[in-house]
Amino acid sequence: MNIQVCFLYTFLCSVGLCFGGFFSTKAQEVSVEIGETEIGLQEVFTITATVNNDRMKECNGFPEIAGFTKVGTSSSQNTTIINGKISSAHSLIQNYKPSKVGTYTLKPFAIQINGKTAQGQGATIKVVQQTARQQNDPFADFFGFMREDSRPTEFLDIKEDAFFSVNTNKSSVYVGEGFNLTVAMYIADANRAFLEFHEIGEQLGEILKKVKPTNCWEENFGIEEITPEIVTINGKSYRQYKIYQGNFYPLNTESIAIPAVDFKMIKFKVAANPSFFGNNHVKDLVSFKSKEKNITVKSLPDHPLKDKVAVGNFKLQEDLSKNEVKTGETFNYKFQLVGEGNLSALKPPALVVTDHFVFYPPNERLQINRSENTVFGSKQFNYLVSANQAGNYRWADYFQWIYFNTQTEKYDTLKSRLTLKATGETIAPNSTLAEGDNSWLAEADNDLQEVEESFALRMFTNLVILTILLLLAYQVFRQRKLLEVQFNKNFLLFRKRK
Image 1 (cartoon, one colour):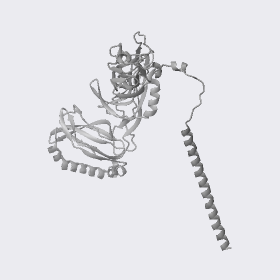
Image 2: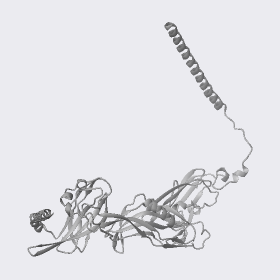
Image 3: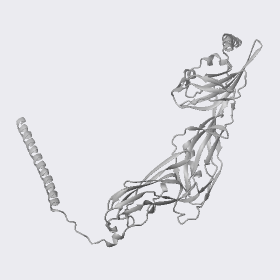
Image 4: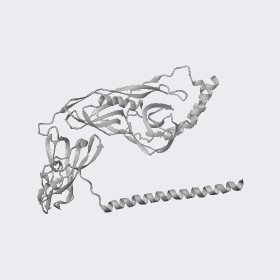
């Protein structure tokens, strides 16, 4: 044992003598160092930021690496005394955990250390299933005498800098007015604890059963992939991981209470004295709890159409395919509502009953966009119209749409600004079918009528049937002749053999 200790001491002293001069001459005030570029899937890639002869007061700008997740930081301090001169180095180490085996690219980057910029070179990082040093560590035997397997490893529980939130963008809405509900995990950039998601699908299903209001129409944002977004809260930088987002539109004045819910994450405790030979992390579950939310739902102001109008913020876009038509001629009119609100529930304008025009039921086209905390888009009603009487017409006399404007908190009416000129002779109202006009049913004869077929049509049908029958007869006759020929051949062959 004494020989090994002496040999180790001699080895470390030799290394110090060989490299001591190099480090003293190459020392920089701030620097960045990249770790091993070939790592195993269970290992971490590191970027180390170092400041010499000063404390690490500020350090930010560690880059994002595609295919890797930041899993916390660690720090170290080195003090060296050479010929009575004291020098120190403070380092902050950012750890990156790979998601899968593959080759990844780290682009050149810059890190701010104590107000100064340190440039980091890019690199190609190769992630393999298991590295050679994991399979066979050459130092394990050489330094085997230093291992104390019998001593239990002490693990540190680093406090996580993160929180879970079920949040809404409004605390008070009108009936029919939308509010946004977001379920997300927030992890601070300064977080040093190793955190991972745990059974998101199962947890989310249970959470949504509790937090989704039942008296609302839902517009789901359809989050399929959880990707971090940088957000700032109270001057502090966080990574926001949205796991659900949707807009809800209350159907009645019942208040909405969103309870507090729990969300579990995997947390890794770190070995107090990490080594190459043992397990340096222990997996555990940590629970985060959201806060309760309450939303007051207000009734709309009194109005004759209070229970029928839409709620939101809309504008009218319209178009006539023709500005001048002849009576009896059909044309198209596009009535399009654009804005924010429950677009799926928007109804077409109530048409004025008139003998001047025939309005056929509209075709509808819906477009919904979801961005940030808003649902917006358009709903289009395309009408086919026919004029019955000549004249100059203001289209606003026939197309008006009333809704409650959430910005002004007043009822508003969108009216057409178009005009139409019709020329020609007057057409009797009963000669065409207007929407909602069923008077023609009372006048219609309900006696059964024999359908008359033309002589030419009957002759053509009979010729087609006769042709098909002749073709079938010919096919049967042909098959019979073929069978007879084949039978005769087989019979003659049989006689010859006999």
